[in-house]
Length: 395
Image: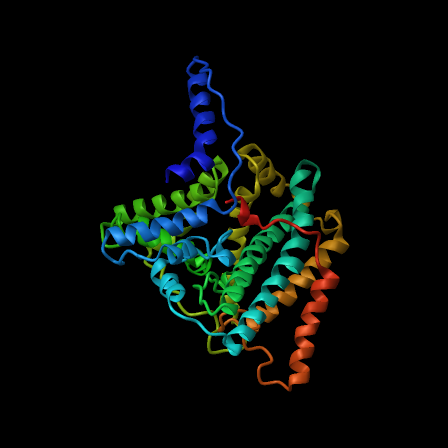
């Protein structure tokens, strides 16, 4: 925790310490450091913490093989951005002999392919549009600001779940099964379901090591509310040393609160329309409303500071949000919407599986199945956006 605290939060606390004393009329002569944040530090710190806590509580025997332990901490596919693995899952796999499995390798390669599509085609194309709008938000119309932040909500999903797919698929090539990290959160019917399906390795980490030790839901309703706010605040602060992430955590906790008070936070455990081809009108409305709230929270997630976030929210409320002709670069926006639609259709078809194309085409003639794989590769090469760093590398 000390390592994480220094590299990620030292300057944040120093700057706020100086600000508070300056407001009181005292100007402390304290300088911040030009600290370079190690890539993925939050992920391998939390992964190692879970091992230490589990050993301390007697849930896990200490590993005596130093090489296996270091492989667990620094397993390269998921080192930079997760999934945040548990020692109880990954260590036993590293300690036993593994042989190459053709079926596992094929399945892993398919997941890598789909992860690349989500990252390179969806996330990177969204990023170019989003970056331009957020950098020039004062001069954009209301509808442009709404479209850009909706694109950002999809960008973060494509970027992060795409990384997870690539990591999980790469690990499978080596005979390692990493835990699932995303379960189609864009098809969620409420905020509680969204957070159960989003970044599963992190949400379960906070549940097991923060929420449950506080008493979880087995305490009074007032303490359950307290625990929920603590959970989301810690999650927000985990993402970065910025007040935007703190407010983002509070915003999400507040959205979660009505479901909690009405005991509806565990209502949707199965994937939407699990026994049907299409959702009904009510489910479509619920999915749309959930995405609307998620989109609002993403303004805080993307803004560099609270000034930009507040200015962006004001711009979104401008009457120009109804003027379609004022949309920035309509041609590019429509192209991105078309690509997003392709991703959503594929993931809707495969929503019962581990990833979008896990079983798609498995029963087809090999010619058509391979044609599908090459088509996805062709789309990746043709529609690849300008190369963008993974969003979660900053965490």
